[in-house]
Image (cartoon, rainbow, N blue to C red; front, side, top):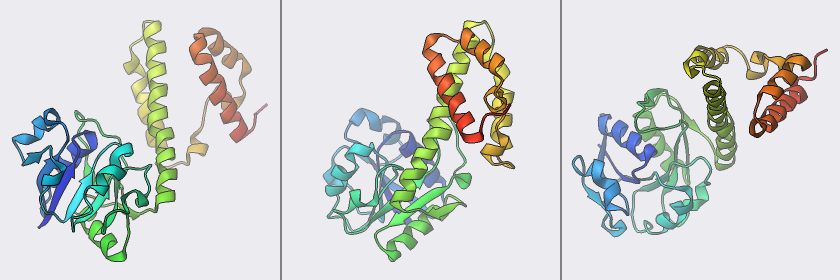
Length: 253
């Protein structure tokens, strides 16, 4: 049985805790956060602590924390024999180099506490400071996911940027679409089948091949109509994305 201490109580920590708790060969033995109030939802389920120096001996210490504190917290764990892991897409492996055994356990997914996720389908990107530690981290990841990939720090940074485009930026565009609907008395739910179809389409097509719309067709009349309808705060985004699509595909006459 592999024993794990989780440091952090945010969305990533919450979902990893739930998934690890249901795994056959993993046992979460403690959860840490520097704020007692943040541990409230965990305290009835598991041993908790607000003192970083009172962490239990474990095989893994999983740092599901804000990027800017990862290195600082790792330095306080350098006396522990277990493998120190962080879950960040943007922070390199070397942020943990103060420890003896360390690595990365990055689940490539967007997490919200009220939204259930199936970890078996989530890619987990792993990296380690030694071949032996990499194999141990791989075994841990395979307990909860069928998609485990060795991704180095530079690849993971690029992957994180790509994820921001396809997830965070696209969601922001959904927000703009919802605002436009609201401004014109339209229920945003009417767009949900279109959103679903667009996402499903790239299972069989490359995103470039799936592109449609007035920017691709260089339909100037439609583009001008859209710009006339949009408030000024959204015109720049519309123009910028239209130009980007045309730069990629070339303007069609």
